[in-house]
Image (cartoon, rainbow, N blue to C red; front, side):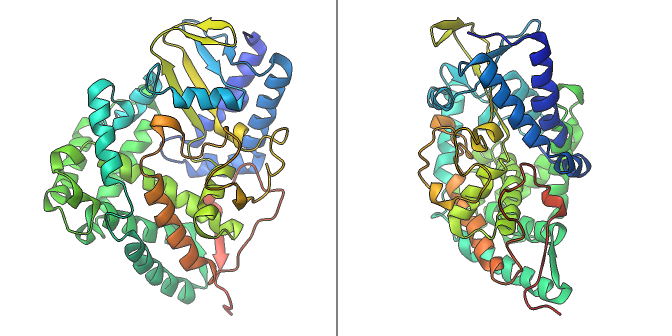
Length: 392
């Protein structure tokens, strides 16, 4: 198995991993995201990954990091294997993920292990189904109110979209009583901002307790028609912060789908392929594992840089164009916008329904699409705006 030179290890961090972390993995940083779009940081990263594959071949590429075993995957079949064989021997609860997510969801399924993970995963899969509540009605209601604003203002901006999207998200997760509880999601955003720094930021336990107390009030209400009504507060308390976190990513995907002129669930899928909101998928081996004839030790961190697998022109003829025909069953195993295997996002169907409902409600009232192929590798959703159709 190839081991990257020290120079290429430096390039992997400087051109791929650190720019991705700088944009904010847990919550996006507007200034850095705007700069990343200006320099097309993801195009630089994908080009670096292609060079690694040309230089070292398709096997996992080990980076030279003192005291750590880190392997970057370069082949889509290896991605499929890694995800299919999770959580054993490839655990989702990596040390980096634990350090980040513990800031706001220390009991979330993503950083749980063993029987505890199995129990929490079952709760997520049972509750996060769009047929359990009327997701379309809630999103359509908020979309209608948003369109009134758009017709008055003449334009849809990210800020106005995000406000409407969060109102819908709070209603879906917690009920209409939580619709205007902006403080709840603002507290979560602050905790998520701290989580961007993982080990490097002290945990704000007092703020997390205030957030959890506020959240608990909504959960104990268990408002009918919300996800909160589908389980006990005790079993949902540790999972709901991640659901709200995931709705942020879903809103970003939906806004970008508008820029594509996307339609329906395929539009949401393609937006998530072109600009993955989970740009790095991590797994950590719990035992030694064999890759192409070479053994890697237990504790190896495996890195899947999804923009490379989603936008590789050597493998995908549609790498930089809108290709809704990919979905819902892509032929390439490297296309994993919602991850894959046993660790696949349990809320993907709910996200697809919510996002596509908002997308279809807004699209015909706005001047879209605003993008044409070749599509940019990095897209700053904060800067997107769309004129109201026929305005002025």
